[in-house]
Length: 525
Image (tube, rainbow, N blue to C red; front, side, top):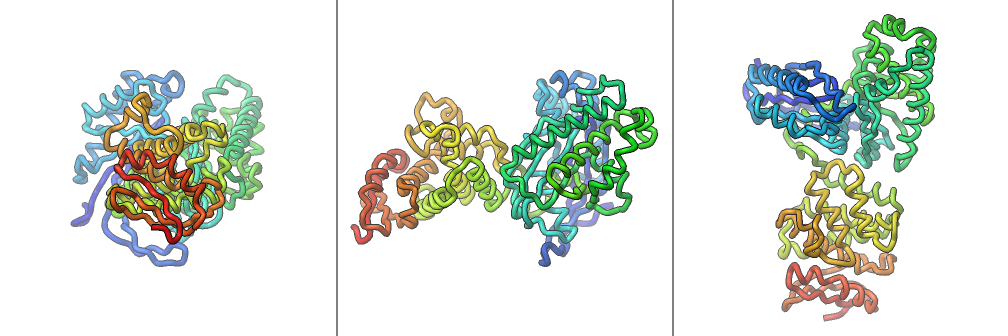
């Protein structure tokens, strides 16, 4: 029986080999200690932890789920929904997501519609950026509950799933980088299952994982790490074998893992399965996880790795707690931390990027009565300003277009699909041409989104024009509307170059607001 006034909800994760669910009760506030500070946070507890075996691995091989698999997904969700309703969960408090198998499934739309029509539950197929955000939300909550600070120096988190590995870099308590690696335990196992000789299988898988780990680490924006956090089903199984405590944060030492692995390398695969007390395929995947952890610790010179008792569902639950920003959203500091990492990664000068962002937000704040946009739009403008020139990493001449391409190509956890389009189009239009009828990507967006883009791009153009030398000569601007003009006052007397620059970059502002932009020097009128 649930507590009076408590909210009960159900979160469902449709993975590659299982459909898993939590039914949780959110029942108020609890006093938690994090980083030496007492903080109040909503508390919850799990009423049911449900797991139903459903093999969706065909999506990883051929890309299509057949009718039988669709039926299995439907039956699993129907069973979970039946259980949830017994606890009084309302239909709008049931949330379901699909991960790598559903992302790669050619007929994902048909599967989602099939399940929706028969269960009333719509599976939201999430991208890897959203997975990274959910795992980050889960880790932040767990660290908080365990009285640990997540604000320390860089931490690398990997979730090794059946179909893919989500890699996240957390620095200063911020999720600053994420990427979806085409590496999963089932995917790798199926590539090499034809190797019947046990020693060949172990050596081949170990060499393959060594190469995969090296590539993952080389793609990181920075490699100086203070902690490794790895999760995933087989990784947790391995942690339970090596650490039989009931701790929620298991620690696996490299030396301990190497000693455990050595005798297993020299026996047959059936013997490995008997020793681990699991079936042969499960044993292979556990040994694959062990190989990944071993190579990860060796390549980073880290003596140990932390394996938390944490799942994607924990991130989904975190989204249901009061005060959460909800799906696909991170707060301003998180989003800007990611922008700063992107700026650094693609070679933008930090002082120039930061000054452009500060000028843009000054103009935004001082023209609020004109544009009437939200605080979230202000954050998107800051993000765009911090990364507007990253395309120069590819080609200087068309850097605005390449900046847009890069933003469409990298994972941006914490921004939803519309917000990604907004920031990518704002950087696209921060210089050169304004939106045209033949710019099909822009024209395909809704009218309200197009207007938001034009307002933010118009403001960014002005900020961009104020630092034409990239010396941060102008750091402050004061804006006022007078007699059909936007007057921009700066604390410099000699501004001939800036006037020339603004004259060529104020067209979009004029188009959006109908105001001529005039730059005035110190003491000007």
